[in-house]
Image (cartoon, rainbow, N blue to C red; front, side, top):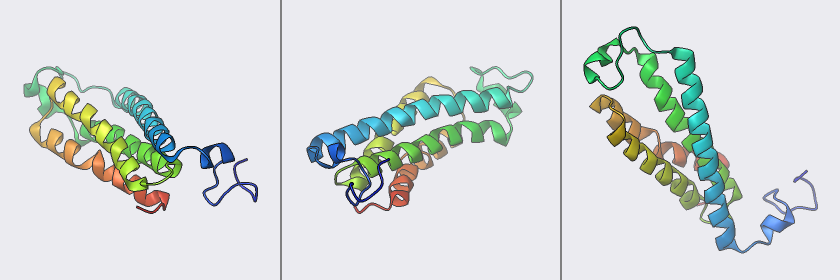
Length: 151
């Protein structure tokens, strides 16, 4: 257990509390990014498996995208926003200081993956814009806010 009088105010074990703050911050961001990416893959795979593809959809032909319903766009948006929130929350909780910056760093790394995907995976322009503007950094900021940690 991490909680109790033996541990400091942040509820972390003494090994993390006494760690060099820069190393702790780097490890916090790495942990946040790893959790973010794993969760992104798991959620995307699960949601797309549950929804399936509409009859007649050809993923590389944007002319068939009219067959997609709102749920088909909600799935990747959720698979991008939820991991950003969770990864940023974790980074903010683990960081020694600069909690907001560590959370936003996780969101920025995830955003880079989203930008790369936007170039590789065909999708409607409105969805790419919404996804890139709302799913990554804003959700990372929300993760920091939910952590309750100072700036």
